[in-house]
Length: 115
Length: 110
Image (cartoon, chains in turn green, red):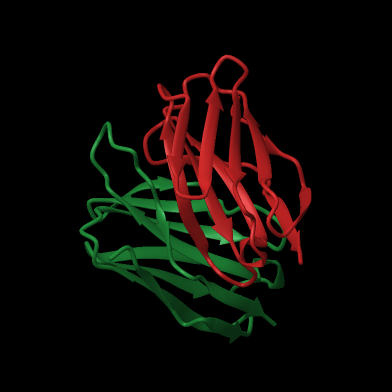
């Protein structure tokens, strides 16, 4: 099973709303990722969690707040977003051990529209 | 610095072979990957190759790596309309950090 699931599939939120994106995997992967993808562009890395600890934050604004409650779940909490934050948000997971191939498996994404 | 480049667009006829090319600049890449993205969907891992290999074949897919020229290619044999998508190459240097190319849109005409 190489499935990463994400909910919701689509989300429309106003600039004053608070919402959360959820990601789940049951492959035993201990590294999980959030990416942002704008139309016709490659994914841009936002955050990396390794063994449930935040290991990489690519200078993401604080209106995006990640959380890794356990080894299978990854959340992205959203607050006071801007219209330019509208994008496809992708979650991915991979093995975390050093020397591995680190192939990342992606979820289907959440299409976020900020109005 | 890291930079991965791909041509923007490729059009082929159904049944022909497709070759999608990618160049990268960092010679310390350890693994190189090919992902497929259909409209509105996530990225599907197609295949990957370790940097000490020259070639990897997986059914209709053949990956060629020329480390001297820092050139990676993905050949899709007997291309089908279902292969129409955007294809991203990516390199891994520091473990779990991937650097993606800009993506190549493959259009397959019936």
